[in-house]
Structure formats: structure tokens, C-alpha cells
Image (cartoon, rainbow, N blue to C red; front, side, top):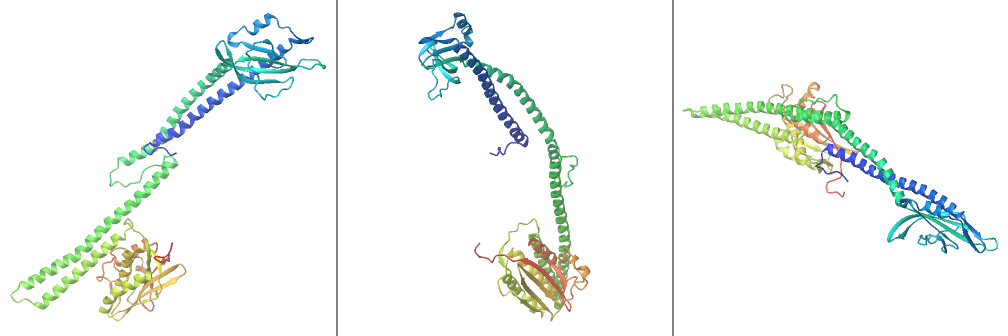
Length: 478
């Protein structure tokens, strides 16, 4: 049974440490009482056995009967202490009263009868309207002659109150020190728990008094290993949060810088076009060129905003649920959508492989954005008359997606940096893009547990490769 959730760690520790101690103390007290009662009964049994044999020696056969040499003084000694009075009875044959107290409890039925052996049992005896709990010793003896064998029963009993009183005294003498020891242990446990939890209190205070912008590591060098491990985990989380915050700040700064340029150009070109059209004899051709530049700036701004939104969706902190999908069908659909742009630039765009379904686990929207960015970059940087090829190459347990073009390519020294945000490579490519296409591709690839790699496409050009793990086909039985 788990403790209630609202209990503090201190209370849970106290509960799990002190409650077993209480149970063990009660068990020890019960065991001590049982042992004390057993020892007192053992002492009484020995006394009763000795008394029964001494009494049996006072009975001697005489003719056809028995002679009992039991003077009154001996009886008075046995009955002197009312709190420890000894009751006795002699019967021969057994249960045929000869001497003593006829109210003596009889031996239990089924008791084995063996001459010379003593038997002990608990019984109740009615005495003067009261019910007395007794401890009885029964001794069977051969009292007849060889010609006339006869069995005699000697019973001696004492009240069990004395043994219970002795057991209670022993329990009190043992239980009181045990109780004191338990209280002392409880105080030491409480003090030890308070001492052991002090590093957690210090850690809590160090976190409570921080501002939302303070992401410095928590100091826990002198703390125990468990608290140090917790502090290390928190510091790791703080470092990740700090990195994400810094990344978001850089992203906002870069986005503001990138958006400022096309918007400023859009404003200046629109002002020039308005100024030209306000003239008495406007130059229509010049105004059209300025409006074309405005249109180009608008397209670039729209593309930049769309890429910024796609990059935000691909961020690690964005929620992502992977589901089975057909990569071959997705690639064919996205490639078909890019055909008009390729034809407008006189570029041969085609798909190789992927005739059969290729099931992977992924996010359809992000993978569409990935393929669209690869095709857009390839079409944009490939000169007219060039070729762009999308290839799907299945392998055991995986599939390779490759997009190749015969454009200018990327120098090996720049192939790592082109995946950085807003980085544009060689001078030939500058001004054509926003520097976000490959950054989006790499971010989406990482979200799908893979990476995009660049290689040279012979005789010239660039190949972007990604590897995806195959899974069960969509809609297949699980």
C-alpha cells in the first residue's frame, strides 16, 4: 500500500521508519510476555511435580487399602498462603476419591496413562462460587501388590494467577526499557531525517529565490550523491533551456533582420512606382519594372515567412506525432507539384524508383516540407536545361531518399555551414534564397531520427541524401 500522495517526504520517511518500529516493539512485547509466561509455567510445573511425588510418598498400601501419613502440620504448610495455595487430591483407582479436595479438575479425556509419569494441563475449578484457573500436575503410580495390581492418581494444582502476575512483572521490567529505547530511536530517526533532508531544503531555497531569467547552474558540490544527481539533472535541463532560449533569441533577431531587407525594398520600390505614376507623363515601362520588383519582393517575403513558419514547426519543442505513411507516394505527389516550376525554368525533373509502397514512420506535413525544400533548392540553383532527379533506393530495413542536380554544387568547405540558419553559400547563390531551406531540411530530418548529408554529383552538381527506417505498411494488421 503506497502512502498518500499529499504526505511530504519527511512524513513518509517517518511513517515507514517508525511504524515498523512500533509493530516490532509490540511483537517483541508479546513475545516477551509469552516467554515469561512459559518460563513461569515451567517453574510452577517443576514445583507441582515435586509436590505430587512428595505427596505420593506419604501414601502406602495397607492390607486391602492405603495408609496416608499426611499430618495436619504438613497440610497447613501447603494451605498457608491463600494467594499461592496448593490444592491436591489422591484417588485410587483414578477418580475414586481418597484424600484432598474432591473438586479437583479431572485429567482431560484421552490423556495417556503411564505409571511414574507426570502430566500437566490447565483447567478451571469452582471454589466458593468463584471460577479459578488452575495449573494441574497429575501423577499415576502403581500402588497395589503383584497379586492385586492397583493404579493410584495423585493430583496437585496451583492457581494460574501467580504465573500471570509473574509474567506481567517480567513484561513490565522488559517493556519499559524497550519503550524508552523506542522513544530514543524515534528522536534519533527524526533528527537523522531532518539532517538528511537539509540538502533538499537548500536546493529548494536556491530555486525558489531565482528569477525566471536566471538559468545559472545550481551549486550542489557538498551535497550527498542523490541530491547531487538531482542537481546535475536540473542543471542539464537548465542548460538545455538556456540553449533553447538563446536559439530563439537568435532566431528572432535573424528573422527580423531578414524580413527588414525585403520589406524595406518593397517600400522603396512601391514609393518609386507611385512617384512615377503621379507624373504628368509617366514612364509606363519603368513603372512596370518597378512593380515587377515589388512583386519579386513580395514573393520573397512570402517565401521567407513560410519558411520561418516551417522552421518553427520543425523545432524540437514543437509537438510531433509520427504515424505510418507511404514515402514513395508522398515523394511522387510533392514532385508532381514542383513540375510547373521546373518547366518554367526548362529543367528536366523526374523520379527514379519508388514504384512499390515504402512505409516509414513520419509526419506527413513536415516530410512534404522537407521534399519541397530540397526540390525548390535544386530547381532554383540548377541552370536552365539542367536536370533534377529524385531517387528512392530501398535497402534491407531502410530506404534512401536522394535529390540530385547538375547545378554549381557546394564546395566541400561550406557543406557543413549551409545547414545553418540564414547562411547562404558562394557568391553565385547569394541573393537567390533566404538561407533557410537546408536548415529546415536538417531540422525535420533530426525530428525523424536521421540527418541530411551532402555529396558531389558527378560530373558536377550536388546530391542530398537521407536514410529512413522502414516500418509496417500503413493500414497493415498489428
